[in-house]
Image (tube, rainbow, N blue to C red; front, side, top):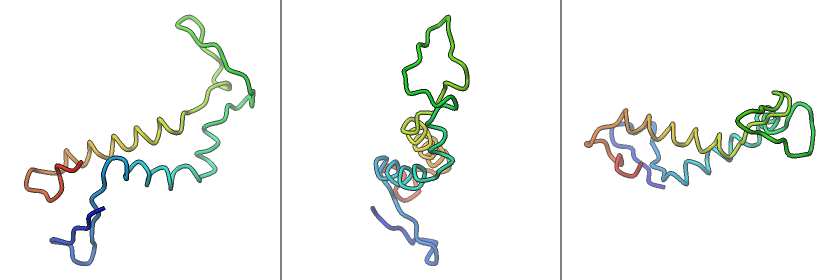
Length: 95
């Protein structure tokens, strides 16, 4: 992880790889109890639920894949950083 202080001596910034960013998001996202609750169906069933194009399970049987959520947050942060940066920005190619 590289640290940049150019232009911001009182607020150093870190340059993270995609994997480092995902690990950071995992570290702070997964321990949150409300986020963990998203990963459990409201019906609290322990079985797999059949899903097809013609049959959709009850919303109470649904859950959120937390790993996919963390991956999507990581990708969103990277896209925003690329959109906000320019070729002259330090470390923009590392994204």
